[in-house]
Image (cartoon, rainbow, N blue to C red; front, side, top):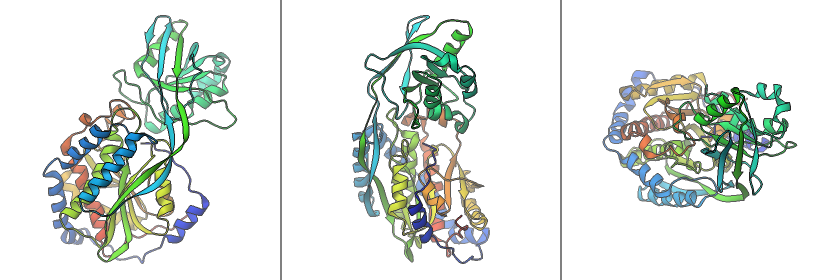
Length: 465
């Protein structure tokens, strides 16, 4: 999960805005009317999703069979091939891939050694997009700081050193800035490399990777993550007045952009096939672990939601489309390309699942107040599995381009306490997920997508700003 926001190009925004339309404001169905019209279909979808562990088993075949799926990798493309084959077996409509060019960064061999005050290998992961060290590595003293402000105050000490940002996790949005911006800040202070304490609230000596960035005009220096435990240890050593020296070796390399694909499959609408409800997640992952939670689970949950509609013979008025976006983690090329490829279509709602597939609680929604009232009423159909709450505000990185053009957006909300324990680490593996929780995520997505796609009137749009 990337969480980055990349503005649309002016031409794309104009094209999507032109495709957007303001529906006549219907009289919204009352909660009782929604329950009467859709209660039986919702019960069937929930029962089918929770009757077995088909989604969990399919997720296992994906992540065990293909492993991590970083953009540009063979594993990603083989996984896409397999998904396309399986979707066709499911009998979904218009199964296809859509080409996308993606960044191609390869980690290579890497290591970090503590040399002084004692010898020890330190677990580490280079951060996505980092440059390499010289062939022999970088041997330098370490300066530990607890914030950008502390680095600024001590910048004279940073020159020629490796800066370590030991910043405890508060929330993702605040703490991740040291991953994304740390190398630039350290380079400006004259550092030869930078390290961060992994962005996680819990650790068992597990480093966490993720995307970082450079700024033009600032020297590019290697950037890597170490474990929470080792960051705190080095900080304690410095506080005791000890000299800390390490050797960092990284062979990371960035290649020219590589071809990849988004995956799309549908149930074509019975009355308004040109109006689309799209739901999905991102098929790529980082190059560690299995990408089971981030975002293999979101991909399979959305896919299974549409498969169940097909299996139960539920064909809504509008087209329901599952989209599996590529390159969310280190570029968002898939989400941007999808918006370009489908700029002339009318999207009624976009739903993203990219926060893990733990116990579902409901959705976050961004759109007009009238539409929020409607989806909250639909949410009550999910109260029986504890997933009926719809909060104001939500969406996702891959549907961001659609949302910025005025399409209402939703993000699946789950019980997220453990998400950042495993995020972007070797611990993001299938065993961290519960088959029953995955099944309830499928049910939650299926009910919301089906009912919105079948409403007599489309969700009312907020004006495009």
